[in-house]
Length: 188
Length: 309
Image (cartoon, rainbow over all chains, first blue to last red; front, side, top):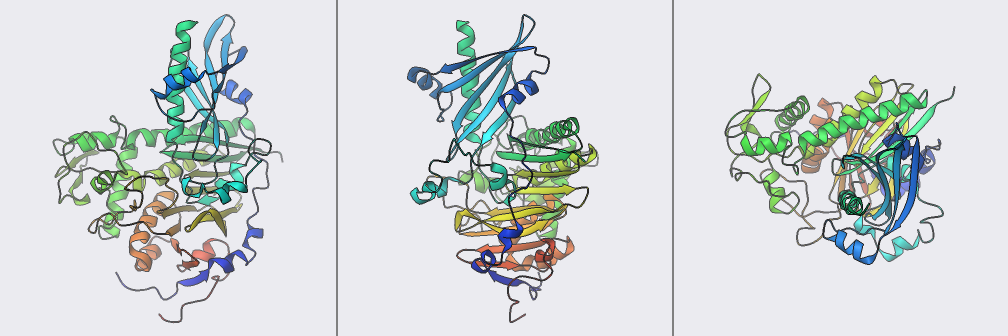
């Protein structure tokens, strides 16, 4: 191919940072909403007239047995929400957290009465960076921000090209919840 | 005028897909979001290298034995892949999967071994919409399927009447605005992924980036670059990234790989496709092709022009 590179321009990243471009690039002005648990309930089971919620605290033995299904760090506290239409159980929504690369990802899996996954939604996503930046100095800047002031992924991620993060841990989380659902169904 | 802005993330295409939508009301926004995710899910299921029953896996198992009927999406991506292979003189090649498998970046498919000398030219698209390989091949459409999925999602959102939308599949993103709203764009610093570099604004354009960073790979092969030269094979990764701005995300996605391999020599191809690119090299340099800064809403190129042609 010809060497027609005559009008490429070069700029230093430092000078870009000082060129005031960050002022041109403010975080999204509109406050977009995250999905709430209630929204996830309605989205997964629109025909339900009642939701029954409880919190499951998984024992170390339970967590260990789920490791055999798929290994990923799970917070161990799972919200289990049964969806009812009259006296008919439509299915169950599980709200759980798995560890992404750095931060917890909160997600909701709806499992129908037939045992099949109806939907998967991410409710809170705080992941901003990849594995390589999991350094003490990098982590320090976020200390204390995890729960009370969660990151807004939109501000951090939505505008950014080149932020590929694997979602394999989430897939593992779903597999674990399916296994847990089967275990619990036996004892109901 | 009141509007409704919704934002959803779901895991598809091996990454997190973010969709932001602004529409006249919640019903329109919600319906459009569902349709957009359905488009992405369809592309994921058809083109997954990992799933045994995807079109891609069926092709890799059977297309060298007999012609295989594939879905419209797979056919469209194969046609696009072949076009980019032709335009780049074979640098963009959807049949490099064996090198990625060998370096642990893709799982080994349960298929007969790929033929050593086989390339994209062995992919034959028959008039009836089926596909045949002249020699055993392992194809992987990961190089453009994500961009294509983003385009399908944007098409669905536009068709269903949303005002503004942005779809971002792990860095392959496309923006749509009926009223010409602009969308801020930043890229990762290739040497320090915790920094993002604001570049300007795009409007109704697509962006894709290729880099060796942020993949989170570990072990022996962690230093291997996922961008493979069809003749030179897998190279060491280095702190460099390429960002391409184009009309469609499929084009941006393919061009990001081609510019990664060709550097500034990709200029004629960028011009031909009305696209522009930047090469960012750690520690501190961004080289922009003609049109890159104007695509980001700047009147003149930032920085200095080179002294020599």
